[in-house]
Image (cartoon, rainbow, N blue to C red; front, top):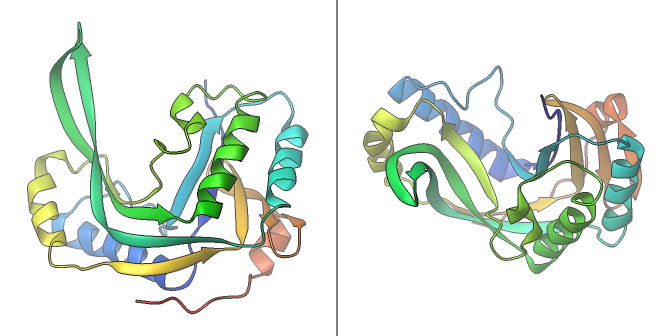
Length: 211
């Protein structure tokens, strides 16, 4: 059964442009398609995917936690990857490197926001990813290549060593998606809940990032 909802941070400014350019570069050079769907939207997932009995309660929770913060800062520092492992009786029988991502170093505030949000949402959703309940084990990341990269992983990884990605970003909105489309956004500075139309029309102020 589909779990349609996801909560994420959509990148702005330099981090967004850097991640999007990397996605297109990898797609073009290595003919892989996993992270390219229409126009890629660089982002960090915070919670989900999930289903729930009361979307109103989920929205209230986002606002309740978000009301304690006005901005959430993070650093981007290099690359890493996820490896999907299959096991039988605790023995790894196969593995596939299926995601390459930008490493995100969250600020203390971002870690606290995500952890507090996850603990509350685990009580009212059907999410079974209990890593989300950990403040320190949860991996903040922004995917730049995925799914069909296994057989080309070494080539892509070598190519990325030519890049020295270090930059800083700031988040002013928390985005709730329904099957990949913006449903609502909570705007941290103004404490406002924006519907889809308002979210697409209104743009939060931007902050110059440091290299």
